[in-house]
Length: 350
Image 1 (tube, rainbow, N blue to C red):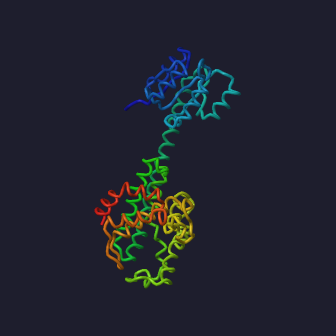
Image 2: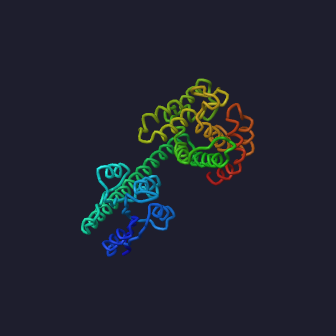
Image 3: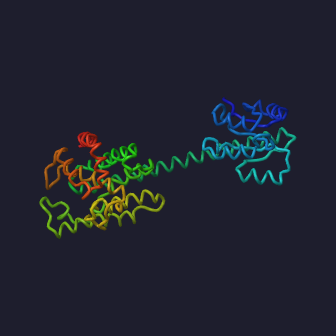
């Protein structure tokens, strides 16, 4: 069984050697003669200790500074540090513990105390790591369960529309394509944090959830809608945002926000003549502006009970002609750059 690594940092060689003699039967002991040497060893990955025994009073860089630097680095922040010191504990203990020191060991060393305190800290570290792993597993399970529930709900809506259920998959996939392009092309001024990208893509399947409140005689009408019927259809975006408000809790406010923005505003227009709120330009949330293009493209190239599918070329022409009126002109430019990916994705996912 591989031994755990203990890094001993002290400018006095005799102290390092004493600690190594106490610990070498149970651990792999690595020595550093200064704080600077210790930081260089750890940050260069020359050694990644399970625990650090750290002297406080050292030239160049004292132990408190070493600890502070370790806590600033995500790779080393969780490594337990035990101070070894003969200094007056009244000040050093308070400062060290406030910086995140795990414990103190006084000089001269008591071999039994040294072993017990190290063993205790390593046990606590393992227990915390195990708990974090369990929490991560539980969170992942809940996320998978929520994602499955939301996608199933979105598919029910699509099936109720007499569609294949692929609309959800296509709009999510094409939204991802457009987001990837925007992230990698800063000249479009649409950089989105990676986490928000994932949330936006996961929010897309719920964009038409409000249609569950639309009567079948209107939703499934094979011909053109009357003015009054279209006004009823238009209510689905506001209804959808209300459903999101009641269905999603505040545990993930970013997910709720993107779901709500997409549900409510994907029928807004760049020129302000959309619904339900008549927003214009960049008043419309970016996620909704992106989905507006994706949703219209997929609606155009897909068969519906009231129409045959348009060709990819015709769909691109319609969207291009609607730049700066219905759609964000910068996003239309981005769409034109990835239109071949849209066409390929649509052909695969039919």
